[in-house]
Image 1: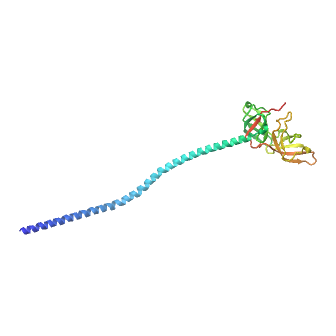
Image 2: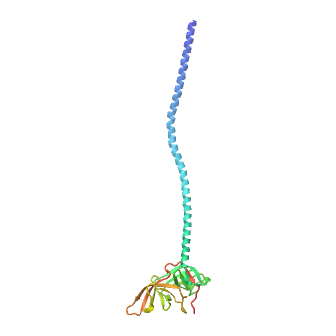
Length: 272
C-alpha cells in the first residue's frame, strides 16, 4: 500500500510539474503572440500617422516661415524705396546745384551787381520768345535791365511785378542789340529771327574784316540798351548777295537760349 501511495504521489507531482511547465510555456507564447499581434496592428497605423503628421508639421512651419519672409521682404522693399528716394533727391539736388553754378557763372559782368532768378515759365513761339522768372520789383529788378546766363546775353526785362518778371530773349523778332568786335571800330545791329532760327546781322561793311568764328559783344555806346562787353553771339556764316556792297551774317547766340533754368538780372539801367 505504501508503495502504491508513493507511486501515486510521484506521478501526481510529475504531472503537476509538467502541467506547470505547460502553463508557463503557453502563457509565454500567448504573451509573445499578443505582443506580435499588437505590433502588427499598431505598426501600420503608426506609419500612417507619421506619414501624414510630419509633412503637415513641415507645411505648417513653412507657412509660418513664409509669412515671416513676406513681411521681411515688404520691409526690405520699403527701406529700399526710401533709400532710392533719398538717392534721387540727392541726385536732383546735385544736378540743380550744378545747373545753378553753371548758369550763374557770368564773370563778364565785371563789378556790376546781379540778382539770380529761376526760370518759371517758357513762352516761345516761332516769332515771340519770352520767359518768366521768379524775381521782380521786390528784388530791385526794373524794366529794361539786361539778363544774362552762362555764356552771355539772354535778353532784357520787359515787364515786372512784385515777385516776378518777364524777359524778352534776344532771339525774339522784336529784339535789337548793338554789338561790336575786335577793336570796336565797327558796330553792328543784331536782330532775332525767332526761337529756332538764331540771330542775324545785315549791312556789314565789306572792309570790316569779319569772318566765321568772330565773337560779338555789346558795344555799350551812349544810349545803348546794354552795358559794354556782354558776349552776344559768334558768327556762323558770312554771305554776300551778288551786287551788294555789304555782308549778311548768321549768328550763334553765346548763351544756350533753349535750355534756361537760372538767370542773372544785371542791376544796370540804360542811360537816358
